[in-house]
Length: 263
Image 1 (cartoon, rainbow, N blue to C red):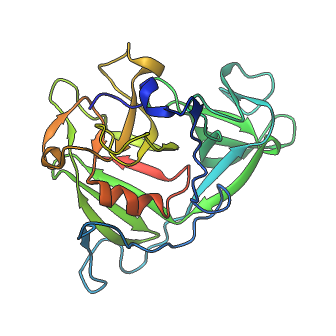
Image 2: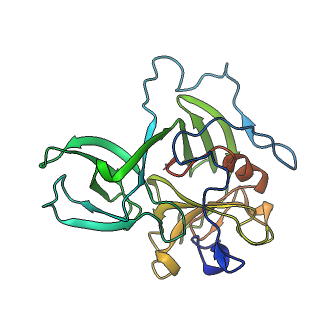
């Protein structure tokens, strides 16, 4: 399927379906939810005894997620109100969800106040900026997603522990899924599960490196599908496809801001 967010996807009954959708009561820490789902296996659960890179001595920090509080915030090239503006963001993003950023670090600003260096959901992929800490609400998540383009798998991690591994479909050679560090920016439910987006669709902070004329710029999505046979193949326009029952499991626990690493 094409990069996410054609109008038919996010308009439901003439109104935007927002991201809250019971992914916790806020966009802060996500609590562990059930992996119960419909239609059989949810993916490969990784035994705790299986050797992984996560075992001893893991000191990985949880991802900090900043939610915009002010009516509008400006991300700048340096932590100062005198720095050049990279982009401006409101409380609600273009998909109708609360605007969040993944925090990379906290730094002191020229004004003596704390600033966050954050990953921005814009072109080019990987753009960062500095936003005043006082304009944001800070939370965290233990979860992250790692997409392996060679193996066509998506692994859900909780802190240093791999929890589940799922089969996925990806972009073709001519419309590849871009590699990099991204995060979840929105969650949408199509009006019917019989579309190419399946039962749910996440919008990511990633953009297609090839398709630049799509609505809203070619946002890459992580979504279900009405074509299960496409999972395990490279047939999309860059989006990441999952079986519906698998993305339904993720929707129960992952908040906005969950990091997505595409390797």
